[in-house]
Length: 259
Ligand code: PEP
Image 1 (cartoon, rainbow, N blue to C red):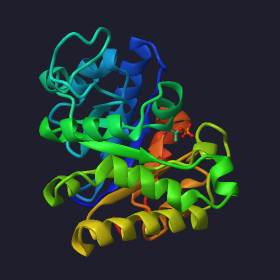
Image 2: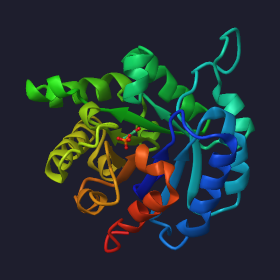
Image 3: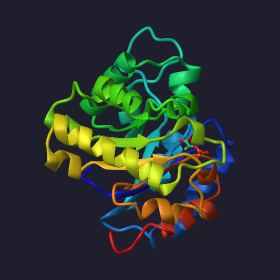
C-alpha cells in the first residue's frame, strides 16, 4: 500500500459477536464521509469475527479488514494457531505483527516477528509492524536504539519491493492503554527517526512512501494535533476504536489539506 492517511482500530480481545457486528455496521454507516483515495480505514478484529467483518466490509471502498496476529507457517501441527492461508481464505487483508502485548505477554521476539512479516507478505497480507520503547527505556535515553534494533531485526531482511508494502506503527509501550499519549513532538521525533532509518537502509523514495502510524492512547481530543505532524500518517487505536463515535471522530480529525 502506498503512503496514505490510515486510521486503524485494534479491537484486541474485546466485544461479543453481536457487538462486533454492530460496531462494524456503525462504522460503515459513516466512514465514507471521511475516506478517499488517500485516507483509509483498517479494522483489526479478533480471529473469530474476521470472516463476518470481512463479509460486511466486502466491496466497500477504502476499508481493510485485518487480524491481530498470525503464525508464519502455511499449515501443520501448531495447535491453536492461525495460518496466513486460512486468513486468505476468509477475506482478511492485513495483520498486526509485533504488537507490544504480543512481544511482552506472549514472548514474541524479533526473530519470530521477522518470519511473520515475511510470511504475511508472501500471502499478500499487509503487515502493520509495531515498534516502541518502554518507559524505562525512554527515561534512560534508549528510545532510538530500541526502535533501531526492532526495525533492523524485524524488517531489514526484506527486499526493497517487500519493504514498500509494509506499514509501521510506532507505539510507545508507556502510552498503550494508559491514557497518557506521547506528545505530538515526541511522536514526530521518533517517526522522523524511523523514516530516516528506512531511507538509509533502502531509499528516500521507499521511506517517503511508507505509512507510519502512531499508537498509544490516541483519542478524539488529541488526534488532530498528532495527525498534523509531517511524519505521522495515521493512528493505530485501541480503546477509542471500540466506540464508533470516537473512532469516526478520530477519522474526521485527519487533516484534509494533506488528505
Ligand atoms: C493499541 O492497542 O495498539 C493501542 C494503541 O491501544 P490504546 O489506544 O488503547 O492505547
